[in-house]
Length: 166
Ligand code: FES
Image (cartoon, rainbow, N blue to C red):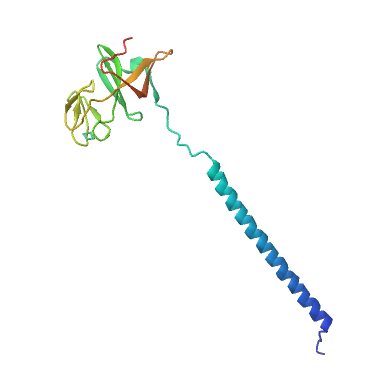
């Protein structure tokens, strides 16, 4: 026997699908609003957060004095400084070439500091000996901490030949 759908049943089915459609579009709208709100909040969070570049401290703890025997020139690659101990005392030099900023290297066999980029040469006291570098290697503020360790401030240059005498 064939099934017959009455007009009332058809109306209910249509009403049900109408409700589903309405519910679907409501949820879609709310979802879109949520995404837009989240995007706006993310934008404002980024906008209001301080845009600060955190750099490492210019102060270097170079350790105990006995790490630097008399006559030694020690390159600290991480800090880009030389720690030098001569008969006159201790001092530190920037290891950055004053020509175009390459990292220099100590050449014990030549008893000089050499720049690999364009051939500048410096004495162990940072004096320019040869090459295109316009200035000597800067001397850096060096002192001894209360714990007897060698400290260097890479942000402060001092006149040449100001030895730290201990
Ligand atoms: S960067 Fe050192 S000589 Fe040019």
